[in-house]
Structures are given as C-alpha cells and as structure tokens.
Image (cartoon, rainbow, N blue to C red; front, side):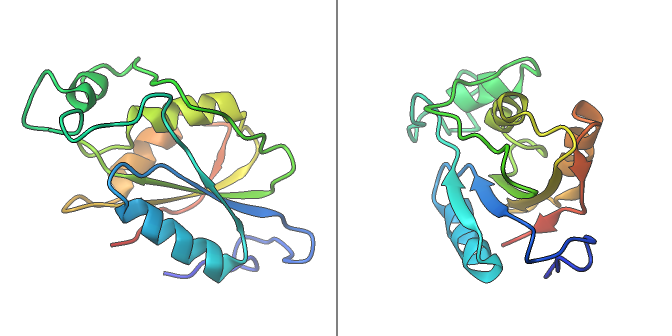
Length: 154
C-alpha cells in the first residue's frame, strides 16, 4: 500500500518525513529501510536501553522479558536514546506486532517524542495478526496524534 503526500493533504516540498521503527529480529528493520527509501525519508531506529535477547523474546515463557512487558499495560521499557521529532511533519512509525498490539517500547517512544498534532502513519510486521487492532489501541491511548490508516508490511 502506497500513501502519497497528496492523499494526506501535504506538500512534498514543505513536508519533512521520518521513518522511525523498532525491530527486535530485523524483519521490521527491513520493511522500514524499504519504506524510507521509497519515501525519501530519514530513517531512525528506536532502540531499547537494554537489547532484547532470544530468551527475552520467547513468547511461550510467561517470565520472559517480552511477556512480562506485554502483560503490564503500564510497562515502558527504557530507550537507548530519543530523537527530537519537532522538525518532522510526517512520522511513519514501525513495529512488530506482539500479542496483537505494538510492543510497549512504542508507547515509551510516543510519550517521549511528543507526537501530539503530528501526522503518524503506523506500519507493522506480523506473522499472523492484522495491523488494525494495534492501530486502534494506539489511537485510543494517544488521541491527540493525527493517526492515519495503518499499513501491514510483510
């Protein structure tokens, strides 16, 4: 699915775009790099302060880091760093779908990036889930963001 600046009522000449993404396994990173190239956008990797290990990502283990985070809606994993998005008009926000929604680190990023009033186009990768439930959850949590339709990029 291709979203044009015209469809968003934005002028390509005055619009500054960034593709910000979190990727634990590399799948979302690959999709983000393709999108950034297509959109001639800057690329930014959202990285946790502590990298996820294979054991951390074991969704079958209820004590794994990802399981503990995803079972706690208030969990906000720390970021390695935070990029200022003040100068950007459009943010493509990418993530893998975990437990049907965006990983909690995406909540950390949104809350620290101050995205209120910004146009955000979520995109996700998934082994089987659709993108809409994750986008609906983000819209409900952050109603001041100008959310656009989500894109599933598998």
